Amino acid sequence: METTVYDQPASTGSRPRPTVNFSQAIKNNFKYLFHFSGRASRSEFWWVYGAFSLVSLIIAIILTFAFNHRLSEMDKFEALTTQYANGEITYAEYHSLAESGTGPAYGVIILLGLLLLWSLISLACTLAVSWRRLQDAGFHGAFYLLSLVGFLALSPLSCTSSPAPPRATSTTSPPI
Image (cartoon, rainbow, N blue to C red; front, side, top):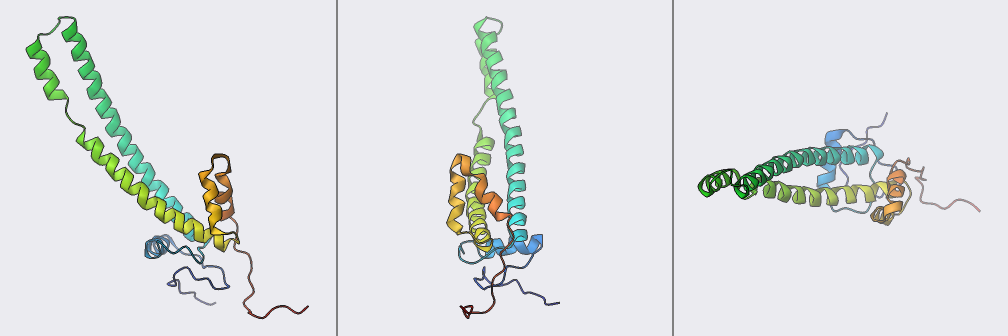
């Protein structure tokens, strides 16, 4: 059995890309981040897509907890304001409680910045590997741009699931 070395930058050869494991897929994805020519195997595409989806999900969960914490602080401030407006607490009490419980949302701002940075990184990575995967499946890489159109978004994703078509290894044309 022939062992295929997977260190070529998304080759444009006539053979389909070999199957890779998780670490090789992530390594190759960052190594050939801006290579839009060539191919990517199904395993490479799905390992990268799955890893980036999982990290995005984790960031979204952390951000949700941060927002919920911030909203609970705002609810406490609203309750304090209502108590002050109804005359239940004095201005000094209101001011001391409000100062201790509210402040700039630096944590949420930092998390949003990290989410923006991660979004840009994952966009570049998934765009490149999707482009190469579509080319390996026999489609033009620009077909991925259909995912920007709402109702056509699943077309490129379904095409990436297609196996690579068999390609001739010979450069001579068939007889007529």
